[in-house]
Image 1 (cartoon, rainbow, N blue to C red):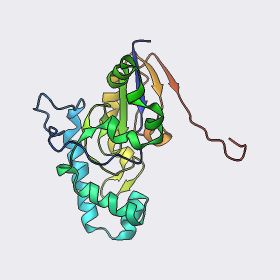
Image 2: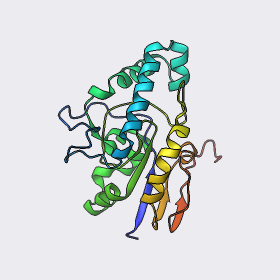
Image 3: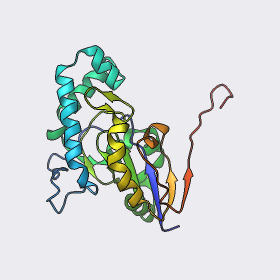
Length: 210
């Protein structure tokens, strides 16, 4: 099955840190910048600017509503989002490695061929960046795709008309492994340009019940 794509969501938790000397992800002119969907840079910057303006003016209650966390977690969300442009970068795959799915994936433990296929065929739908490849360089951030940002609205609705044409073109004629939660699927106007799709659903068993 050489002609396929894997659709992934980012993780809620993210690895901190990164390389402060990595090339600017927004500098599409740089030949060594990993940024495959750089046509989204204008919209990415616009969303980041709106997010930062909101944070600077909002009270705790409004911040909690957007980020869905309180206390130290809220302070961290505010801090990382205000420092996005100056933050060190790492690949999206490494940034999301703190998440359950990415930890279970164990990318470093995969055979070299499997690693290459994931990097070449993976597509991540992100609340802040729209769509990413696994080796795109990104800063730390916090923004769920189902969040509602004042002045912007629901993040999935913001991205839908922008990323749908890119996604439909990227998966055209391919076999799709769709590992997206419902919130992320809602950001994609699926025109069924692919050859076939398999949607993977994850279940949890608690007290003997699914």
